[in-house]
Image 1 (tube, rainbow, N blue to C red):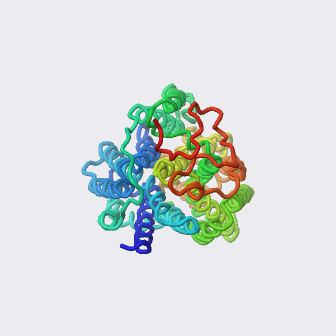
Image 2: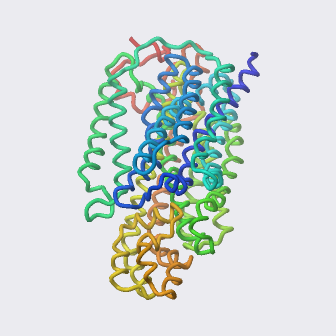
Image 3: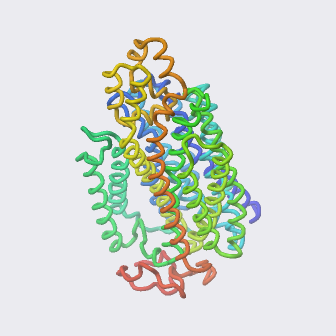
Amino acid sequence: MDDAALRRSTLWVATLAVFFAFLNTSIVLISLPAVFRGLHLDPLEPGNLGYLLWLLTGYLVVTSVLVVLGGRLGDVFGRARMFTLGFGIFTVGALLAGLTPSHGGTGAVELIVFRCVQGVGGALLAANSVALVVDVYPTHRRGAAVGITQVAAIAGSFLGLLVGGLVADHSWRAVFLLNVPVGVIGTVWAKRSLHDKHESKKVGLDPWGNVLFAIGLVGILTAMTYGIQPYGGHITGWTSPFVLTCLLGGIAVLGLFYAVERRVANPLVDFRLFRSRAFSMGNAAGFFGALARGGQQFMLVIWLQAIWLPRHGYSFHDTPLWAGIYLLPMSVGFMLAGPVSGSLSDRFGARAFASGGMLVCSATFIGLMLMPANFPLWLFFLLLALNGIGFGMFSSPNATAVMNAVPAAARGAASGIRSMAMNSGQVLSIGLFMTLLVLGLAGSLPQKLHAGLVGAGVPEAIAAHASAAPPVSSVFAAFLGYDPVQTVLGPQNVQALPASVRAHVEAHSFFPDAIGPAFMNGIIVVFTLAAIVCFISAIASLLRGGRFVADELDPERAPLEEPDAPGLLGDVIDEPAIGGGAIGARA
């Protein structure tokens, strides 16, 4: 296979892998109502909310924890080999998920485990896909090539909402099984066409580093997941001893991980990479960008499903599909801006495009924050498209700049770190945004809902009981396509109401009118934070320095640190500067 054919084959198989890996993060998001109906399980019953949250976040948690190891394995055993293995594991996980044998809580646990198996494969794909593309493309064409993979990632993320809404109505198992034929094709394609351009490194795999990193990151991400749930008399779980133990223990273990990594011969994360300002600031920008984007999709879906769509006559059962359709302008904006900005960044560097994109995103979050709950659709579409353009301007140049900042021998590890920063940002974003939304709702939702129910003729005792339900119950009910009023009142209480009262509380506009003002209090807080985080990402991107490509200094033995930009973390690294040595040259 000549170089041109190898480049094309590598790009398209990597694009296929990235597309389906990200499609699987959102296809489950929109298909959860059908999944729980198929499992004969009510996720909103006491004790069942954990199943819902782990089905939402389990895949991302596993990917975040293992993606750094996946990149390290690619450097040691070959990126093509690990990528192919990842495609195979991903396909097996999808097959197992689609064939989940049990129902009820047991079936939910089985499905969560199978999703985690998919996450193992997804980690190997995410860690090695961009590195493989960067390996085969020359410097002046990397931005455009990486731009295509980034477009595939975001397109998969948003098209998953649409595909999930269409497929889940037919069969919840098809949501997972549709990955199987594509996975088989991708695995065979990768096995036959991908080849490593750089020799693998026969070094140790740092078992202590792997264990400490996994324990620490799992602890923090678990805390973010359970912090959303009510605990005792509190509307969130942040006072729970379990959540606090996971959070503080995870932080402490990651501190120990850092201390260990500075001293072992072959670390999982070589902190010398962060001496490069382009690498450290690029990853910081990526993390904050993911922190803004990860919970954004979740918030917009809830906004559409809980308020706007029912207010405009859509039944709650149909809102998951239509929410996916109404979010497509964001995907279109990204797909337009991603390849163009990636190609231009090859010539002019990443800083202007990445920083400018984050500033555009910050402005769109401010615009979304200022909209009324019952917004004009044209303005919503415009802000979504601009938001997609902003993230498209950022993602491709930033990813390329991060990968250009390290020598070829370190690309697997660098790609793993980049993916870990983004995946962790997404999971943290969901937990953080959801917590802020619930806190915002708690201030006024009980009173608004109580007043609305009593005003509609619901008996005081029933209205008081319903308004005392945790706000997260109403939010997740609407998110899952259930009628929130029936959820908080209880089907038996609804049926016992007089016909005129029942017709009023079951009207599509009743819940949106009741929750609207309280919801917007939460949205203002959430999107204010998102705007600030995007601004921080823009600043981090500006601090990356000018255009820098490590391999252009010396294609064979590129240093880890730009000669004109002292590393920001160099003063806390024990090892001496590396001069012209490659990353693998560590004693």
